[in-house]
Length: 186
Image (cartoon, rainbow, N blue to C red; front, top):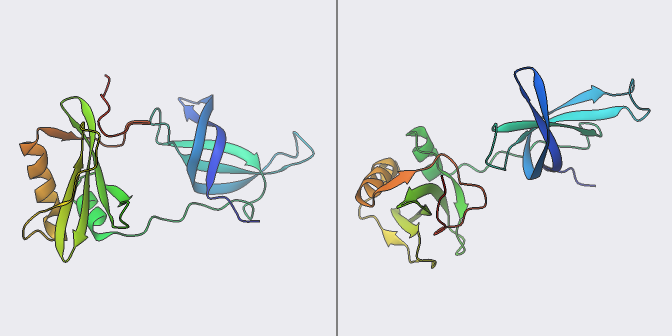
């Protein structure tokens, strides 16, 4: 049996000494795990306390869940592969994440708000030049455009210039269940 790297079910978090329960999560990445003993409560006492990511987009970034099993039954999610574009952008304070295009290119994606619509800026490197794709409110996937003479180290400057010229604001995370072109509420 393969060990799961994600958790689906109900989770909880702690707030001011209180436990807030019943948060449904799906495919939450396991960050850490620690064995706990519940034999004082039930005969089947082998359990683990998982610290997981919060994929809902609401509440704290991390949640907890106590579930049956041992550390051998569960496994933390392996770290994402290192991508030089993502690393360069995040080191510059821009919240980029790994992205795989439908063409098989691995690059970075930034989540944007433009004219109160959710958009994405996808950046890949081809032939030692950065290329970008803007997924916005037009509902189709445009071609990739080259940023002339731009290398990976130039990515933060190019992203900031793009956002300034297109009046786009960088979001820290992707809004829950948002797709490019969807109006943002709130």
